[in-house]
Amino acid sequence: MPNFLEGLPKEKVQLLYILGTAKAELTEQQFYQCAYESTGMNWFSFHDVVGDLEENGDIVSMRRPFGACFSLTEQGKMTLGMFEKGLTYSLRTSIDEYLKRFAPQFRQERELVSSEEPLPGGGMLVRLKALEGERTLLEVDLTVASLEESLALRKNWQQRSAQLYDIIYDTLTKEEK
Image (cartoon, rainbow, N blue to C red; front, side):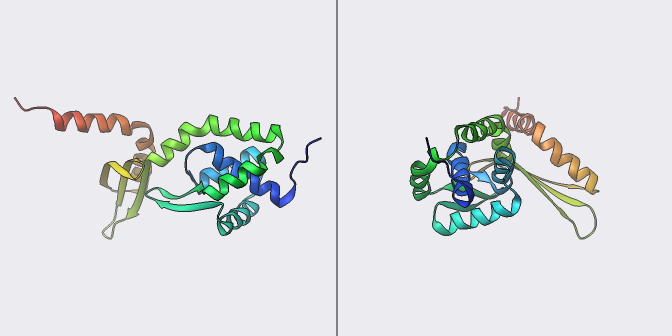
C-alpha cells in the first residue's frame, strides 16, 4: 500500500506538481487559482507554502511585463521527481485536468495585458500590450474620458487584440499606389 503525503509536505508537493505540470510560468493569481480549485488550498496556506518553497530554492518568482510569475527551479524539479508519487492519483488527475482546461486562458492572460492610470487633468490613460515572452509585439496608449471607457477598452482588448494587430499590420505594410 503506497504512503501518501499529508499536511505541509503534501501542500508543498501539490504546488511543485502544479508548476511542473503547467509547463509554463504562472502568474501568482493563476497559480493560486489552480491550487484552490484543484486542491482546495486556501489563500493563507498558499502564501505560506510558496514562501517556504522560494526560501528553499524549489521555485522562483520572476518579474515579467504582466506581473510576477512562478516557475520550478532545477532543485524543484528534482524534489518533485522524488515525491510526486506521494500525491494520490485522483489529486494529480484533478490538477492535470484543471491545467489542461485553463492553459489557453492562462496563456492569453500572460500575452495580452492592460493597465490604466488617472491623468492629472481628468480622464484615464489606458495602456494595452500584446506580448510574446519578454518581447512586446504591440503597445497602444489611449486617453479616454472615464473609468467606464477604460474598463471597456481593457475588456475588449482580450477579445479583439488579434484583429486590431492584423488591421494595423496590413495597413502599415501596404504599398501606396
